[in-house]
Image (cartoon, rainbow, N blue to C red; front, side):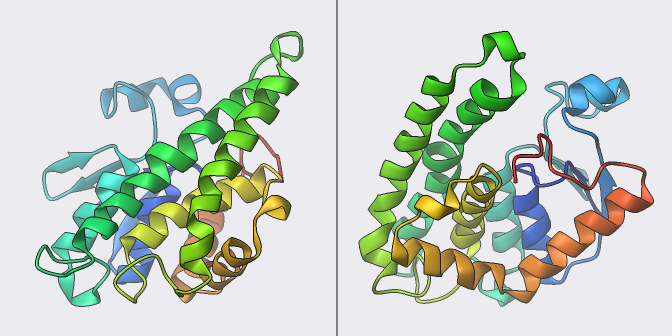
Length: 221
C-alpha cells in the first residue's frame, strides 16, 4: 500500500492527483501546515518537515514532480508517462519540471511575503513582483495551449498534473483572473477531470476524518 503524507492543497496534491488518475490504492495521512511546526514526530519521516512524503514498498520520495514521474513510469498502462522512444519525451520532461521549478517557485515567495510573514515583515511589492514573474513565465504556454488540448504527446500526462498544480496554487492566490485565454481554458479542462475531482474530495474527506483543517493554509482563496 502506498502511503502519502499530505497537507491540503500543498505540493503533495500533485502525487495525490496522480494516484487518483492511476486508480491506485493508497493511505492518505493528513498534516496541518506547516508540518515541521505542528507535528514534530513527522521529522523522523522527513527531516525537512515538508510535504509530500511518499512511501511505496520500501521507497521514500519527497519531491512532488519526481513522484509524479515515478508513479507514471511504474504504471505505464495508464499512459500518463511518455516513453523515451516517443517524440514528445523531451517536451514531457521539460514541462514536468517546468511546473515545479519555474511556476511553483515564485508562488512560494508570494505566499511568504503576502501571507506567511508577520504583518510588519510583509512586502506587498515583492509579492506583486513575483506574481508578475509567475504570470510572465506562464504566458510561455499560451501559444501551445491555443493549439493543443494538453502539454505534450497529444494526451494528458504527468506533466499536466505538475503544471496543473501550479495553476491550482495560483487560483488560491487570486491569480487565475490574470490568466491568458488559452491557459484559462486549459485550467478549466483540468478541473473537470474525474481524477482531479476525486483528489479534491479525498483530501477533504481525509482532513475531516483526521481532524485537520480542510481549508488551504493560508486561506487565500
